[in-house]
Length: 428
Image (cartoon, rainbow, N blue to C red; front, side, top):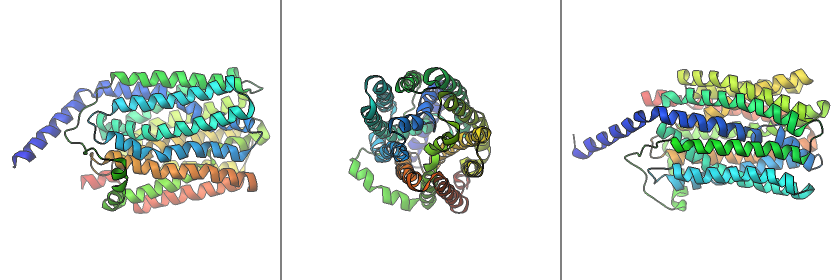
């Protein structure tokens, strides 16, 4: 065996030893970070509080609700490649993650402060700007922390980590959401009530980020050479050509993500007949979070046994079923059941999408693959809510839901037919 091959093998062995040595510590760090961080961010991304708040500030404009979600996703689309370029040449990426993570949390604080110190249209504009900035930082953060997970947690344990972390975060989110809806927002919602809820979200996410201080990041033996952002972008076509299965997966994930256009409008549709009181928002957010909580244990266990491809397909199916139910029935009980289904489906979809991306190709190209997948799906996430807002404003909510179901179904079909299970490919 050539000496350089032997040296490379020894280097990989030392890297694996580092991963195993710090696995328990790193597992706890990811768990604590996810528990508190996700609790805070779920209060922002839940399809309840923020859409209702923006609808109130905008005077009832469905288009502005869609625009807000679109701006956030647009930001997330623009920066994943920047995030990959920042870390692909580094042996340690956590310091960069602390910077982008802090900036993300700063936008939540500004959303909260806007409600306290601004009024009317100025509050709305400030929130739209903050959501755009949050998307920009989240686009980078998604690449950095997904890559960090791939470095510190073996693939065989990621499903259980994701499931247990989301399970705990869901329990905490459900309690915080109920308390926020009932006690902070109340029967007569005001900007101050929403702002106290978002301030609580900022505190939780900030504590969560600090938990990553205990993480011990292993240094891989090989990293990509440093290159310019333009050079990184220029490598994208070749990377897609080299792995057709990954390319088809990106297409499918983009189609399914476009189907998420209906997210901000479920609560607005139900609120037409039930009213958007703080108590109603709290209860619906509670069941949305609890369903995601309970289902995460299932998603994680099933993913470790069958792979994330199967859970991707199953989550799309659950999402379609919940949307169809809302289209054919209404009332408080139906709304609760629908949000149980959406909460479970969203957690399965997000977990599957993130982890499935990590299983294609080699480690050196992973930051760019994460960036490509996040960029393309981010574009869909930006276009979808904007399209949904226009459809809702001019044609009604039911057409939004119908188009959403179509995109989810086509995305699932592409994965089922054209994307093989990555774990079987590697095993073969």
